[in-house]
Structure formats: C-alpha cells, structure tokens
Length: 176
Picture 1 (spheres, rainbow, N blue to C red):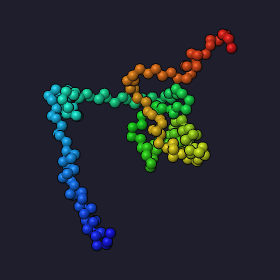
Picture 2: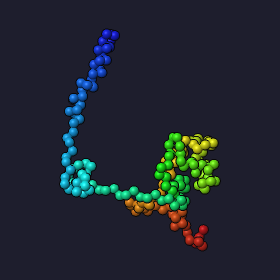
Picture 3: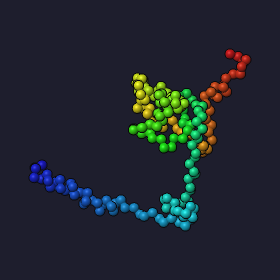
Picture 4: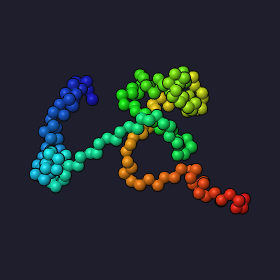
C-alpha cells in the first residue's frame, strides 16, 4: 500500500463506528419491559424487579447478627481454619492495612490476649519460613469467617471425624 493511501484508510477506519452506530442500535434494540401489574405492586408497594406479570416481590430476611462472644469454637476437621468469634464490621483489610494483625500478630498477643496467628502464615508456597506474614496468608477472610446467629436453610447432617470414630470403635472389653 502506498503512503498516500494511508491517511484515507485511517480516516475511514476512524469513521467506521459512527457509520455503523445506527445499524447496531436497530440490531440490539429490545422491547421495553411490560408494566408491572397491580398485583405485583400490592405485594410490597413496588413492582417486581423484572416487571413480569404475576411475579411477587419477596422481602429479603433481615441480616443475621454477628456472634461476638469471643468464645473459641471447636473445629470439625483437621486443618480447618478457626472461625472469627467477634464482630469485624469496619475492619480495614486491604493492601495498605490489616486490622486483624493489630491483635493477632505475635508482638501484640500479650496485650490483646488474642491467639497468635499460626506459624503456617509465615511460610511461602515453597515452605520457606519468612520473617513476616506471607502475602499468601495476608487476607484473613479468604479462609476465616465470622459467625452469625443465622439458622441453617437446610438440615445439616455433617458429623465430625471424632464422632464417626467413636461410633465405629468396638465397646471396651470386646475383642482387640
């Protein structure tokens, strides 16, 4: 291609979106959502979010309250991360700061009486021990979760390993 054709080609390419816009608007045009029925609006005073006929708005249940009794919970399986037994609303946990470490870092546990973070948090992915918390373990909420007083939505049939072992162990005095 010659150098004199380059500016013309570039101008056409730059104008292409403007030329194709009306076609794209017609191709992707959608019908407006149908109006909400009187029944939808009466459900909660406002129409269903879809605007579809016959759908009722269901109010979301209130948020469960945080459990903040500071009681350590028994773990259900080996290597389970401990749960957070206190409220964490308003904690800064980002690249600049980690509020959790103001109590759980080794140097502050004497004053705070909080359990120190595990030594596993000081290892990199190759198992090398570091002098500070590994970047892999810096964001606590990846593994540790706060507890709430929420009731389970389905029946929980989970059994921890200790109860399974106890149930399958022969009674004392029977065989070896």
